[in-house]
Length: 320
Image 1 (cartoon, rainbow, N blue to C red):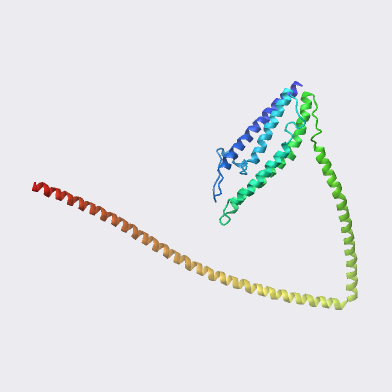
Image 2 (image 1 turned 30 degrees about the horizontal axis):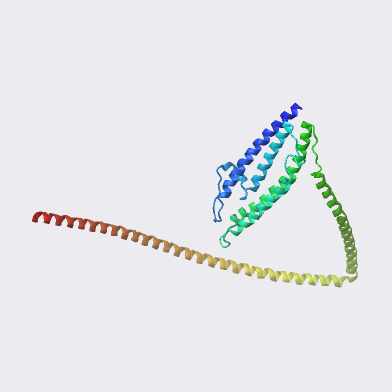
């Protein structure tokens, strides 16, 4: 019994470390989600770049669900190690599965709402992917957590609690067996339908075989006339194909000519663009020279006014 308690404390420590990493990922996701704005081309970075890969949605549901789940698992392992009484929903609570799926759906709704904030005339695929990741990942993680992680680990931890404490947990309220029974019932309903479809398919295949035999017999009776008619039809089809091939060839040649013409026009436009750019550079240079000349003229005027004021002062001094 003492060995099982030590193993339980060790498991609590391991899941505690995992919960810490999940909490850091959630914090980093919250930081990125608070930066969200409906701006085209905006980049999002968290305070801990190593955890940016986990910030796949702006609702933070994807990282919040594992963090809360691992915290509850750690608390449950500590209860088991200390011999505390637990409920039938151990290590989670009664509405854990429903609440988790509801949170995933909330994340989906928020991802769809985010799309409406972008301008539809300028929105790009990159921003739509951000919104769709929020909408899809939140529900996906919620479903995976509930059905592939929470339910199995709940049964394992309840069994481990009975192994360590010696008190069996009542699982009458929840059970994976009910899910298995529902699945078996669905399969039992589907199997007869598949059998009926298979029998119907066999009947259709049998009818097709009989029709094929009738067609072969008809061919034998038709003899040479049917073969000649078939040959004529093939020749007509071949001539039609040749005409279509010729039309396609002419269309291809015409498209190549148009491409060549457009290429030449593009070269002319590029030359004109280069001329315009050179003229623009020349005008910019002249504008810069005019600005510098204007500045020099302004400085000369300032110096002339300063010299004139000094001359006036000298004249006044000589008169005095």
